[in-house]
Amino acid sequence: MANLANVAVRNLRIDLGANTVIDDLDLDVRAGEFVVLLGPSGCGKSTLLHSIAGLIDVADGSIEIGGEDMTWADPKDRGVALVFQSYALYPTMNVERNLSFALRINGTPKDEIERRVKRAADMLQLGPLLTRKPSQLSGGQRQRVAIGRALVREADVFLFDEPLSNLDAKLRTELRRELKQLHQQLGATMIYVTHDQVEAMTLATRMAVMKGGVIQQFGTPAEVYARPDNLFVATFLGTPPMNLLRGALEAGDGKLWFRTPHLAVDVTHYAFRGAPDFGRACVLGVRPEDVRAAGAVRAGHSASGGRLTLIEPMGNHRVLWLDYHGVQIASIDQDKAPLVSGTAVPFSLDGAHVSLFDEETGARL
Ligand SMILES: Nc1ncnc2c1ncn2[C@@H]1O[C@H](COP(=O)(O)OP(=O)(O)OP(=O)(O)O)[C@@H](O)[C@H]1O
Ligand SMILES: [Mg+2]
Image (cartoon, rainbow, N blue to C red; front, side, top):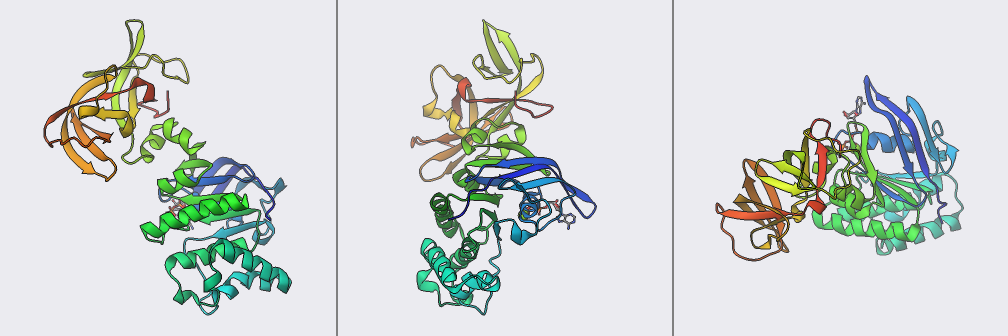
């Protein structure tokens, strides 16, 4: 079995060419965790992952794995195994040879190789495919072999760089579930890079949302989704993303209100991080599933009206798009009642399920 190793990245700086891609970054991955690095293209996910693997030199800071300083250790001495997006299998070798290649190279005894290959093949359902060449495998099977090659190394930490992004949607969700089960069976530490928020939400024990080389928020998927630390995280996650309304905070009737010219939301019980700053421009964020529209409007919630501009059927629900004084508001609607685009519809939202941000800094209030 793999040993359990934590990963501690401290004050990391990475320069690529003339660019400082990552500066003063800290990341703590506990032993046995499944941490996902999520962010848009170019935000530095792969750079961070590859520096942990030892494929990129760091300009400053340190990387500890399993309590040992590995900042300058050789990749093969770090106890990590990396799986890339491109499978990079050896085309002339069959699956069994592909799986065992690294072990044969480093002189692992034959019976030990057999044991590890059998174990990986069982876990990944590769048993019946061991004698096939990569060209005789589907994309999903090839990626399983690539994962198997990492497994046989019995590493302490598994690193994945967008391993599913070359697969079609159905295969991707299947392999995603297999990876989660694999993590549950192995209990090994995993760090997984993706720009797919569904992968991040479903796989992560904790996720780090990155932008411009900076971790914007690090927490459980539920925390990050429900209480985004800033406007970037709020709008990066969720399909459709969080709705945003501009307004200001006001005290009145012994309560605290978020007010726009057409709507007042009771935020008396909002968990402010600091003392609320009245009169300062702020933004209210509300998830589409917390906006009730048409027949689902709730009594007692803050209510207003918009014009229904679009209905998107999604099978088990539909998304209603409302024009609210020039702002698009999305509402996830579980009702089946017929609605007509272009008509006026009421909507309501619950002040207990909103986020507030400073308009200027984007920081959560
Ligand atoms: N050799 C290089 N020289 C200079 N800049 C580089 C080099 N390689 C990458 N970069 C820059 O570093 C930044 C981070 O790249 P990185 O590959 O880590 O992004 P990523 O988050 O993995 O993106 P993607 O989702 O597209 O894979 C990008 O802005 C990229 O342009
Ligand atoms: Mg990348």
